[in-house]
Image (tube, rainbow, N blue to C red; front, top):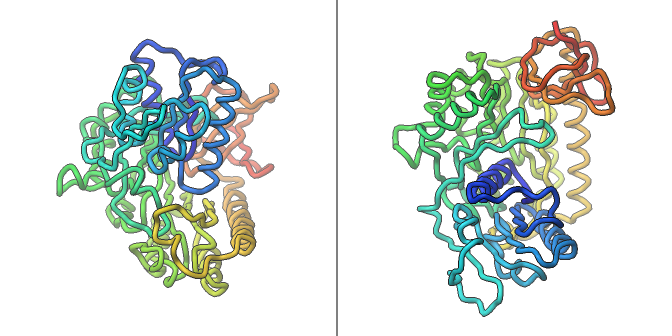
Length: 434
């Protein structure tokens, strides 16, 4: 099993792996040793597609006799393109991912007769698709901080984004199921859980007209014994005053806000079909910083969107400079087939977009370093992840406000400590247990 792309894709992969384990299969150490290889793909950029094709060719080269199953967002978007690649035995889109192990292990008639040897299972109907729910762990954290996907799909139609077409409309995991999953993780000994989704802040609106994301957060706090809840990316429109107050006032919620921005230019935001204006976004970030002076605040920013002029980019650069971001996820625009942006005029030359990316990357690095240095001599809460490599007397940890930390001494993973920060070395905090 190999996963590509975002946290939601990683979570889907964990649920798919569980499907096979429930049928008595074990995970192979390497794809070359497996009878069945599942590639769970991403398609958010052209580079993601390229990575998936390269992985397909590699698996076929290393293990030509395996059953090679390709699923995920790229499989949903371009199934025939994938089916034409050598070695692919099945293409199963997101619409049928919840049945993947069953489909892979039975005889079937393809949903779409394409006159190909490879059967393809893809539909554009997501309304009754089961929302995969299984905790997934960042391999770098050695199963310390599980990520639980509670929402999938998106009802927005940003002009650059293919995700609504490959994941469908917004769908929410029921509240009772989320409480059950969180309590199971707590009973297993986990102390921090990250909740995520494709459009997380829209959770609940398809379940009950009165349910909002804040209700989910309150329920986790009141109905589970979870020590720390971390919220992943939430759109600016969904950072209500109520949510800001919840996060800032509860010691059980990590002081961390990720709010996609994409551009600081009003003109470009309108062309992107984003549902906020720069001044709305600025006010939201300033409200979060006022409520949580030490919080991590991150954003997604895109450069090179069609028609982005030097003046548009300067507005983005100035907003990044002005606002208290502690990190950025930077993207260079990549045309996605079928999205409105691909037909827009004045596509930005690749070299120009890359230079803009570089400028913001360097700016973000300076802001992150300044944020880290502001905590030298202060105390932070941190959860241990794993002991450092090469036998060093250090333990890797992550602070409540999303900073990497090297903790002096050897400690078991999955423990919370109050830490005194002593220094910043190589872009990582260094500290000792108080």
